[in-house]
Length: 515
Image (cartoon, rainbow, N blue to C red):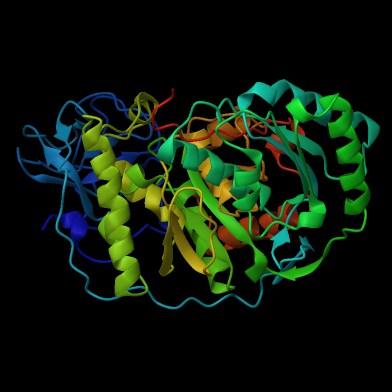
């Protein structure tokens, strides 16, 4: 058993005690994280002042705290993130040139009960937000008209209908949006099912006060089959047609949009408990600080939402590899534990079937930011799920049903996984990033920067600066409570940067045969 399979959740140091230039995340760690540039020959801060840097080391990267012998585990977060490929003297830069993964293709897992505790919601935090309660009881954070197409052939028609509807009915809703894609034709089997499931999930998202579905008529993704896959859709808020069967699809679409927008005028924000929130967790373009600032902050929010009886959804299955046993130890029962095992092993087999190593990650951007192995990235990434019990595992394209933390099958790709979160029913996404991206999705996408430099350089992308956690005197609990109050405002209508810049799109997982 390797170090990363022991215990329950990685320990994160309270930022109130962080020195400003170096951080030891866990007392067991034999590496430190560099927070400010470290020059060759420079002595480390106390209590490690006897160690001198052997070379220049950039922020986010790791420096050896002591001699790590060849074959010895490199420890971060209190867990092994790999093994030394050679002797690594104290003060040396620890990265891809001298550290390699410990991951293998298959692991035998044993259920040992649930190690997660019940969580309590703090009385000093707001317990309600102003949302839109739908006919089926679900609650949206926005009241938008969504236009979805069965097939890429009618993408431009969907976009033109949305453009004209926004011009004619400006201010009557939170907006009209066309979410287009290139699929739906010449797809077979699971590939077609994936496309249909994601579109059906989006159609049922409560942020859509109404839905217009535009088909062509001859595609594999038939309109009738798509509508049948939406059991929770309010039929009174749905309009649909095939372009081949009407005289003018633009006129027909605009007429349908007018009818739906008139119905949406009945919708009003009302006070809804936090238990009605469904929050998706996503990290994109991580750096060496993502697992120290942004992801733990989002994890604290996950715990607050779960404690209030809400739903939190965590995806990016490959970014659980190397840390999956931490999640397994929090499975609410043996059935959920077995579902997590299947989730992980099936995705590993997906890599193997495509002749790819399961550890082909982090990305070049991740590595430039200081991440070395997938274990290191995963131990930081899963912190977005906090410490709550895992209550459910769902396949790609399925709707979340259970309160608590749900694991959703999906790849790590930003656009694909974020779209899957929205399709699962998430009404808000918390998107952590150390590198930055303007990307946004159908539901409010709250961008949280892991470092303050990114927040300063890209205010048009970033909604909240988690890098401020590293400022001396910051208290982790107070900081997370501040962020939670900000999220309540966003759930109640405050617009995110992706909404202000109209960066909203979808992407569907393509993993099968095209005719």
